[in-house]
Length: 270
Image (cartoon, rainbow, N blue to C red; front, side):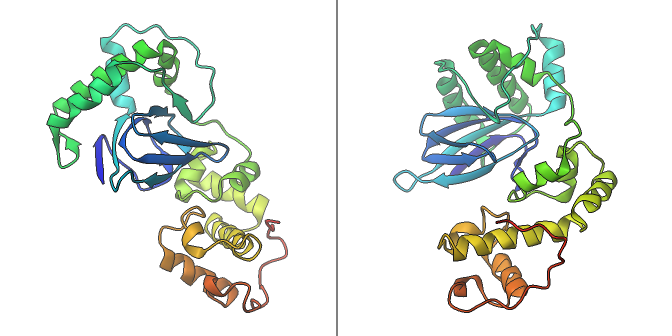
């Protein structure tokens, strides 16, 4: 698997900066909490920053090759100072933004290959190539200026609605706080008022309840669900599940779980 990038890749299921992705070989399946998307060989798209997203990669003839380019805020501000840019409103609220076909984009990706050293382009070439790509994207879709050069932060939102919708994503409590427009201390305070629990305990319980439902009622396999429920490894999921229910996830449906000691104030999934 070849993974080429300009910028920093985070292990969290979170888009920290506006990001461009191009699939050279293989497929990438994406889920943003509301919609599913597929990028196939030769496909490309832009991902909006401050959004949650889950990736599933599939090889093509045993190969997977992709390029990621990240546009951080300091770079965008330098670009804006250098280039006269006409700002327009960007109406779409989608996480994944499809870019119109443009002949310069595949040519740009090919031009990157000689610069890569172990999958990373070093300075000073990294900023030069990012600038080139951004010029191409703005030519292909001028209204993207309203997205790239909007430096606002997430607005305060309803914690209960947001968490019940996004609890499956593997991101830190700090990140959840930021995405709901709060400091960490304010997030924890508001969270306890609503859920009567800490964010970490609530997240673990919510994910495990969903796991039990998927295993018992939907007949899913542990290996198929642990990543989509926010667990980084199968052993961590199995350990947490057995600690919560008294049986390993592979035994669901075979042995009744021990009675739950969950507080009556905790919400149930189904």
